[in-house]
Image (cartoon, rainbow over all chains, first blue to last red; front, side, top):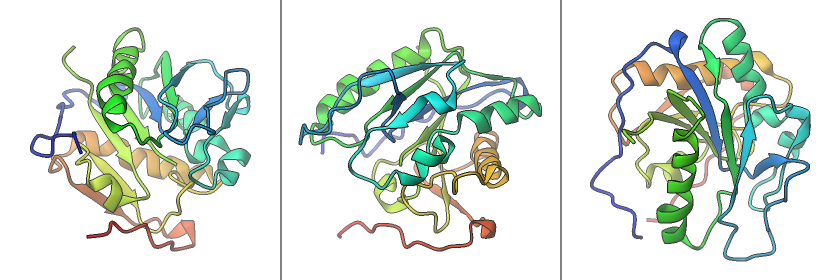
Length: 141
Length: 84
């Protein structure tokens, strides 16, 4: 495996949650129903990702992923992509804001190097540019 | 880019642990596909998300996974194990 095991890429969190904006990055295969679904017929996995904007309705989201049982997420997307939960936490003042951008991708790949050196960096750049996130919640399935 | 702090919510702690995530929460016994809990259980989902976010504000050992119990989930599912 090409991923370094010696160094954990730890970024300190300096702020307070109540003053922080939070984004979600999910490997659970989440995308908007009107976006192109992930390609589950590719046995190597789909290396693409989908950008989900802050005002996305949870009912407009779905899962395309064939490596876990997503029947519960089909009923309530928040079990893998907690966008409404995050909005509740904002309303309650636990966090300051929900980020402008969130990301869904399909967390299954046989192309680890391409995922690590390509997709992961692209996602990080996507969040860094214009999401205004101070912190990111990562979820799988 | 200075980096953005992350917290992972994982239901496969052994598998995720191989990647040594900077911060991670394992809601004990949650099944795959239920990272935040079950459909419609908003208070449970909120508790899981709050506990995950709180890991940003405490000193955890980078690369380790913190396990929390959420008895209201009501089930226990053995997580997948990594073949040694």
